[in-house]
Length: 138
Ligand SMILES: Nc1ncnc2c1ncn2[C@@H]1O[C@H](COP(=O)(O)OP(=O)(O)O)[C@@H](O)[C@H]1O
Ligand SMILES: [Mg+2]
Image (cartoon, rainbow, N blue to C red; front, side, top):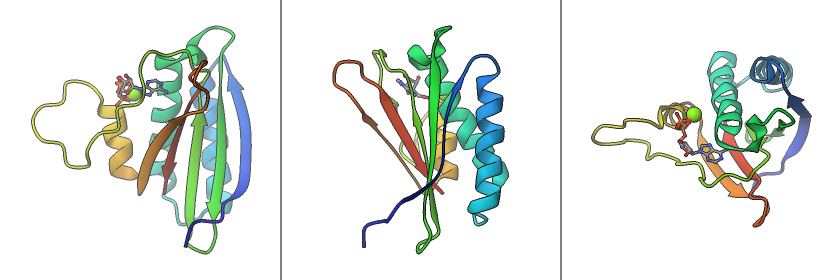
C-alpha cells in the first residue's frame, strides 16, 4: 500500500543561525508527533540536510533560506522529513550506497543520513531553477 502522508509541520528558515533554528523546531515537532523516531538520530539528519542546502545551493546566499516540511503516515509509523533548497546548483545530492566499499574522501554527510534513515531520496522541483527537494524517512 502506498503511504498516506499527513503534514504536521512546515516552516521556512533564513539566516542567521538557520541550521540551529531548523533543527530545534523540527526535533520539537517530531518529539511531539512522531515518538517512534529517535530525536538524537533525527537531529543529525535534519542538520546534515539543511547544511547541505546551505553549502550546495542558493540557500547559502545572504537572502537565501531553506524550507523544512514534516509528514507522517500514522498507519505505518513513518515520518518523512522534506528539505527544499533555493536551487541554482550545478550538483545534485550524491546518495551513497548503504554499504560503500573503498575509501570515501567526502560525502560523509549523506552516508550518515543513509545509515540513520529508513529511506532517502531527492528530486529536482523545477528544471530551470533546479530547486532540490531531499527527503528522508524514519
Ligand atoms: N541540496 C543539494 N543540492 C545540490 N547538491 C547537493 C545537495 N546536497 C548534497 N549535494 C551534493 O552531494 C554531495 C554529497 O553530500 P554530503 O554527503 O553531505 O557531502 P558534503 O556536504 O560534505 O560535500 C555534495 O558534495 C554535493 O555535491
Ligand atoms: Mg554535507
